[in-house]
Image (cartoon, rainbow, N blue to C red):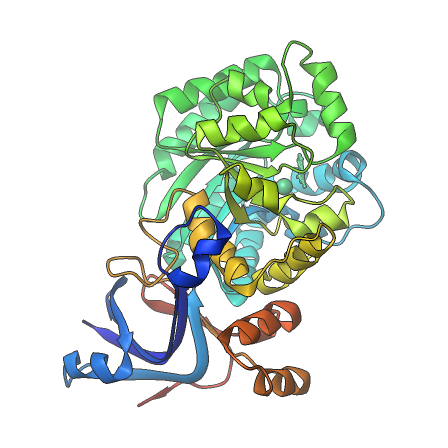
Length: 439
Ligand code: GUN
Ligand code: FE
């Protein structure tokens, strides 16, 4: 091994079918040693066992007093919307027209896209998010800039250019053929390059003509290992609109399903008002959904039904959905998810919440063989959490009786201040000014 890290570690060791199975898969090692070989995890063991295997020439990085968890996975976010986060007053369709489309119009400019990509990735990393599934804009330049920046950091990232050809301003629409050609060129340039992957990204059904959806379908058939990323059933007016635009389809999801856009690598953001048949279709096709609590509350879209999601056996990950979402922080996002649960009598335990933010999210993105916990052979992406960075947190941390309570307090009181360092591919890519010492 080439690096050794000492500290407290928490992860979930296996994907589960039901939240009741989570406590037995949870692993907490209060004094642990993580061994890395370059960007790969070799082992995680209690310090007393691990130190015996340690070669003399490998220095031990000492993070004692910190809690180290797998890097957070954000399963739905729009990088160009970073600059309009917190726009006042509207629900989805008006919010898109009034705020989103004008901001997205700027990403034809490579310089602007590069500047915002760097800012965006810094926001992710300083919040402990090491992998994300990301919307660009309709402009290929937006995606080139983002992938270039992510590649420079060694981040595992999935992204795509928005595809849309109707019901949006002229300056943001394209023809189905242009959309096909530009997307195809981006796939060839970026898909499977290092840790980068491409997601076909039709914005949502209302901005897609049947011809455009056919092109998306054609690309999925030509490049079957790409991802598919879109929105589904977020807002009641949106759903009515889809019904009027696609009257021949049984329901909203059926529009995507009819074009073979459901499947193991398909991720549908929101899914707040699904019919029973749509849940069943998500399950049957092994599609995943992204739960975006801060966005759903901010736009007044609705409450995600976690219980049904488990009961229907649908894969789910957490999404911030910035800029409709109001934070990049996965800790804050989990805190809001807890409140969404409370409004529906669902008790989101810390163990389950951290699962969704790590291994569960990785599973939703079909990346659980590579990231999501500290299993040997996985990629070394992790976050060093400082569990108490304010007087209030220090008091509450000290009087917490066990790891569950400490994790729960982190998700109710925590935010970016709690991220001491973020590691990607075996390298520290972000850290607070407080120093790290070698043991
Ligand atoms: N539906 C279609 N486009 C968008 C978007 O940019 N954000 C959200 N939250 N929903 C959408
Ligand atoms: Fe979104």
